[in-house]
Structure formats: C-alpha cells, structure tokens
Image (cartoon, rainbow, N blue to C red; front, side):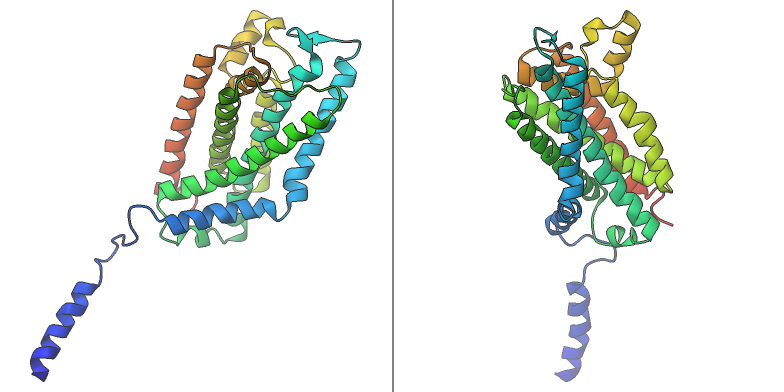
Length: 282
C-alpha cells in the first residue's frame, strides 16, 4: 500500500501545478489592474497641492490676465463675452497638460530610479499596463478640469452653463485619454528629463496654444485655418466649447471621428510598446 501511494502522489502533485509560463489568474488580472491604477492615482493625490491646486491657480491666472488684456471694454467673441468664450479652452488646456504630465513622469521617474522592474514583474499583460497607466492620467486630467471649471463657475463675470453635456463629456475624456497615451510613449522613449521637457515645450505647449484656445479660427487666414484643422487639440477644445456655449468652429462629426481614430492608433502603439518591452526591458 505504501509503494502504490508513493507512486501515485508525484503524478497528482504534477497535475496540480499549471504548465510553466501559463496564465492562471483569469482572462483579466483585475486585482493587478486596480492596484496599478490606484498607485498611479495616489501618486498625484498625495501631492494634490502641486498636481491639482497649482494647475487650477495657473489657469485662473491665465483667465484673469487674458480677460483684462484682451477682454476689456466689453469685447465680444462669437457673439458672447470673451471670458465665456475663453473658459472652455482653458479647461481643456489644463486637462491636456496634466494628463500628459502624470503618465510621462510616472514612467520616466521609474526608469531613472531603476524601479521600473517593479511594474514589469507582476503578472500584468500589455493591455492591463496600458489601461492602468492611462487610467491614472485620465483621472488626474479630469480632476484638474473639474477643479478649474468649478473655480471659473465661482468667478464673477464668467458664465459657465452647459448646453450639451455629451459633448463636454466625450471631448474632455478624449483629450485626457489622448494625452495620457502620448505621455506613456514619451516616458518610455525619454532617457532623461530633458527629453520629456522637450516634448512638453516643443509639441504639447505649441499645439495647445495654437488650437483656438484664445481666439476663434474664423479670424485666421486660410493657411492657418488648415493648420488648425489638422491639430487634434483644436477639435477637443472646440468640442468642449460647443458643449458649454452651444457653438463651435469645427464639424463635430469630423472631430469625433478624428479624435477617436487617433486614440485607437495611440492605444495600439502603447500596447505594442508594452508587449515588446521597448526601452523598458534590458
């Protein structure tokens, strides 16, 4: 009896272990995905004065300066007070910059400090890594946009009413997703902070400022109007502005298709980067 039991035990033990390299936690590692998202969210929540309050204060200063400099004597843009026209653009600009900053800084700091391995070793698929990082960036971007919008709502002389909630929700979400994805790609590509700053200064900032944030593109020449219509930031800012004031400079259908297509392409690109371990795995 002892010999037969000992001969059966190893076979049973072998059968109880999964095949080497196989996934045993289900189709989606929900615990790991939530943990990564929670970590990315807690990164900026722990220093909320720097990551949430400071961008709101900076954006409010933009509003005060530009309305005083350009909005005096009852200046009207698109048949409305300049402050009402300007507010949606500033909200989206804050969303764009902070969604990008969250994902790019997270990955770059992990690479510089050498602890990126702590993210790559857990049983997280490329899609789960993508969703976790992007989710954190989207959360920060939308929270900053909400804080800026709340501050504008409380400011005297600024009218904040929502005409089309779906447009505000879609284009704000599209903006935060797009810049979170771009931030992931920047963090993976960059080898030092100067590289990330170069993308911010020479790509993100110019596209934000030249996207109709402070003006209507109807006043531009034909060439500059074509440039604006190629800029994805323009559609996101104009879409949110349409949601608030009920009118915009672009075709909404074009903006939805354009931003959705870019987000799909960027998602596949980020997925491929995590799948191959480009500049992440030695």
